[in-house]
Image 1 (cartoon, rainbow, N blue to C red):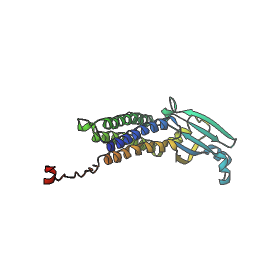
Image 2: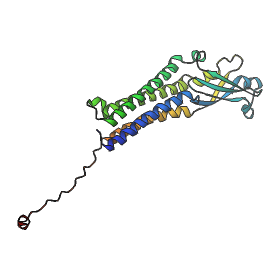
Image 3: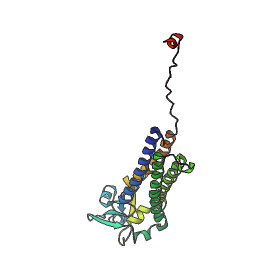
Length: 232
């Protein structure tokens, strides 16, 4: 059985892995990966709007991996509309990259549970095989954190190099054309970053658990036997 010191750190490692699992679920469910400001370029061109008047043509947009919301401002008041990524909008995006992001996050969910299981195993017993020990915990955390980081990098690439926001903003728009003037990563994106950070923290936790504690030695006093004691 592992000592109390290692049990405490392995327990913390299992909690961090489980928290990463929950964070990924929240990131998938909440449609706030990115928000932005969209300019109705068609409306601006029609009225030849100047800088002070551009505010009337700037709307808002936010979205996640499954759904989002868009507020159009084309000079006639705001119009809000909800949209879903699947099954039609994804065809206008880089479908392969978007599906890859989802698959990576679902894989990260499984890896987070596996890393939690390994931490619990080491907390209740000392595994016979080295691959199931601290090295195994580190391996699964590296894989889980790496997969989440890859999903984050893929989403960033979709935004920066594949004009993700602009494609979503102009989906099913026949009369108006929108231009993205501002983009900002939102809480779901940063939640994924926190998930990857949790796995990185687990590597530190496992390393600390391997620090040997100093042994506490009790001083045993030697009994001295004298001749008087023997006579007594």
